[in-house]
Length: 222
Length: 401
Ligand SMILES: Nc1ncnc2c1ncn2[C@@H]1O[C@H](COP(=O)(O)OP(=O)(O)OP(=O)(O)O)[C@@H](O)[C@H]1O
Ligand SMILES: [Mg+2]
Image (cartoon, rainbow over all chains, first blue to last red; front, side):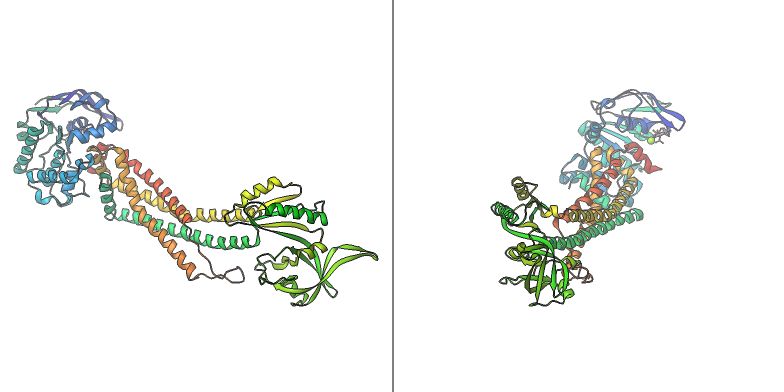
């Protein structure tokens, strides 16, 4: 589960101090999915980075899957991210030197999983989003929507306890978007995964257990 | 293949894709190849020359020598007696294979009325190894070419050997002298041959030059350590009477110069390797800055900083090992060829050989490789450090703008 309280975050832009989060409280129970909506620049990605132990808040406490992120050492956090978290980045962030399949396998390689079972798992995921035949392609040979789906497979390959996805269906047509949402549903049913999705798509938000709106630096039911 | 290899090998392949990184990685490999080849070649040439020089030195200098104090109070029979005692002591020492007594003095050779000042060397048993005598022959007077030419001497000519110390006769002091036939004329391989001595058997020399400087030359068993035996002898010999000098001590200045020469040449040529290592650092930095966002993603997915650093260390190794290995092998091979076919010649009147000899020593090659590894590892460590210091969010942001 995810429990956040009183999180603040400001960025220093030269002489200007931009307060992005002004006391965010959030609880997502285990196996639940929360959607976060809000205008561009409101701090959705910033909040997701804090939940993912990629960034530290200025104040407040963050507990994810039983770990107090603000009290842990960076080296411990790296292991935690690999073990327990799945990320879908807003700008999919595939590794251009590796094929689609290798990209999907990458979190498992970091974890030191045996490659044979890992690649079978990765291929099965690619198949579920209709990309099995693109497994050997490099990112620059793929369309934006295809890259997006591969990034989602990569986040799911280790079946994480917590999934953080920044606009996972942003670039997708309704059919592909539907495939992705079904994939997330499957994972949640199997692993009881806790999910936080940032989305601009009302259809997607409707399917989540809770919809929260980030505006003016804090969360409110949307 | 683990994660670190997986990433490093792929990044190594990607260095071909970017023109700047390709140029830098080529410069790294090429520079390391040229540097290690030049180092191995330079050391082989030095070792070749120095080896000849040391062999020559070993032929002219005994492993150990015992010199009696200059102007020692003892002379004549007493000196001979003292020398005998020490010779016996030395001969009885473990590891000493042979002892030869020698006597150095200045005297004259006189042929009719033309005396010529010469160095005289009295030897016991057989002449020193650098005199080319037949094994069975027992020559009496051996004259260097320089002296024979000046005096017009030929083998078989009778010549008078004159001592500076007069002998007392009933009719007053008269020069001590002895008439001897020239049995052999020799040519030393030294460039400065004006000091080459006239050689006499020891009894004759002792009789004429009682005040000459006496010396014992020791030959050692093949596995004996000159320093150890030298220390042992020193303990048994009064330093006021005689001093013990090892081969190394006797040639200390020369050996120092040889080492200095080697060090200077090595440092100068090693600069090529240093420059190539800077190219490696630049190449690694460029790879890292072009992969910033991706390294950030790997960190975000939980790759620990230490492993990301190792990716770039390994990448540094991959970028340098080919060039360095190839260069080292090429240098050694080229040195062997140059030596075998005597490709580079020198004027034969300058040195004992008329070509530049090359000697590839295993230890030299190891030192070259060690220095190369040291330089490149330093560059790789500095370059890789940045990979472990990346902030994942900042790094990923950098790709978008
Ligand atoms: N490293 C940074 N330095 C300075 N300002 C930053 C930094 N990161 C984010 N910001 C600012 O913080 C604010 C929130 O950014 P964030 O990316 O969280 O917005 P967002 O809600 O995800 O927007 P979008 O919907 O466009 O993705 C923005 O105004 C952005 O300019
Ligand atoms: Mg965002």
